[in-house]
Image 1 (cartoon, rainbow, N blue to C red):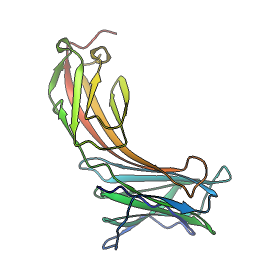
Image 2: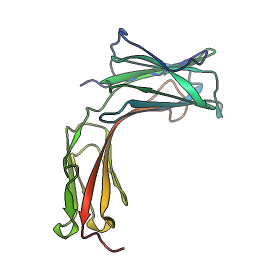
Image 3: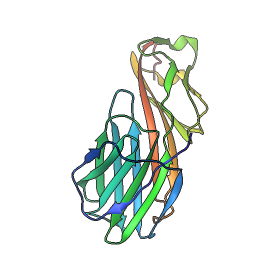
Image 4: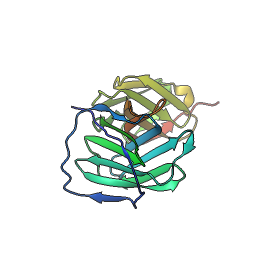
Length: 219
């Protein structure tokens, strides 16, 4: 699966809007630009929910207002709306296989493309199941794999994993309440060569699994 996303900052900020039927194709590309803008882009999808897009843009260390920030995918093109100085956001139904981000303002520009991680499902624990701490540490498994990095969280544990191993172990001592929520977030990331500093774009897919806990551990 090819990974993709392109970023560019365009002149006037428009209200967030989608355009269906966009002619869209891409290969993963760190992109190009004027090396004058700092761009930090985040796209996050969840099952059964709209995809959230957020891009922060600055020039010479100051948040940049009035930029046009556009994201394209096979779901259509969408222009992000300013929600704070230098911050642009939008929501879009569905989760595309890849995205292109474009940002441009008065001759300054950044662009790049990235492939999305394939949507995953958590295999264990099952949603609504009961985990007994007397059985040992909780083993969390998911599929498919293949993302650049993975994060697994519960209410009191935060595991950052190298790559995407498909399995994580949460210590039983971190389960201290009768209920908990297990989050698995898999992310692809690319450095935007046309931006300044550590400009980057990342695409994540996150699942949330609620479980019951028997014999919670006393802190």
